[in-house]
Image (cartoon, rainbow, N blue to C red; front, top):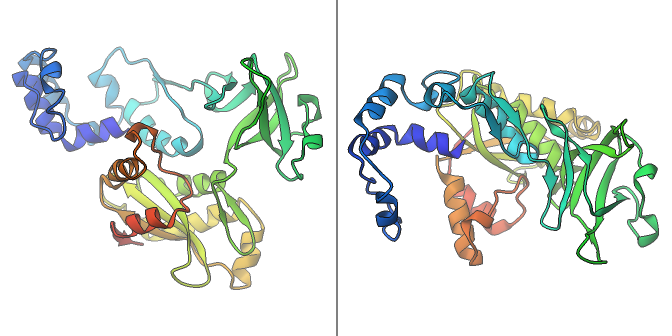
Length: 337
């Protein structure tokens, strides 16, 4: 979706470069321009064809018109990336198959898609040894569970012993077990979120999975077309609440004024404690702030330079707790609903 949005923003420049066969004058590519240019060739016919079709967001199911052989979009679709799915589907149309690669982490691969057409459900499928800790328990050594000990509906952390060694790794993810594969009894689960990415309010813990659901609820064509987001514990006024910081595509929709109420209703569905806190005056409606286009791309660049690491290693967290990063984003807010 980043690529599609760049194409929308720089459509005229894209057509010009295709028509003339010349790499455009873009900042920060001087060191690779000559290597890119040798692969470019002028194609006026293709440029005219693209011009007659129009830019990405000019109509739905745009991508198959541009690439007639597009049959499958294979990408990570769960967790925070799920918020991009409605926008991606509007671009690729109803006939392109959407598939995910499975669930894994730095240490190893843990799960495979349970059903190729369901991008949010996985089954444990690995050559590594996977054990579990109930997130509600003390999580001591003696509390480690095996697959047959799990209960559908509960949340667990995976504990992995890889085939490369005898060390147990506690993976800092939370899995929502929903059942067992009838073929071999292995756990079937949804990715719930990172354990350390939570909003800790005075009365409840709001998880990454919760804020993803809240953001998905307001990601509507007539409300806010979410490009990227993060959330914070908003204590600028009391009582505190969930603060949503968004980058959107296009303008706000005609029903944008109802986004805070819609977000609150979605928040209530994640935990009954939210309604009780609201009734007691300990919670207010979520806040929604919109940053200027390109902010999160700039954030990755800024954060990478700050940590002296590659931009590709920087992700925008679903829950932001670093005060310096929050202050950096605050300075780029252009609108609050």
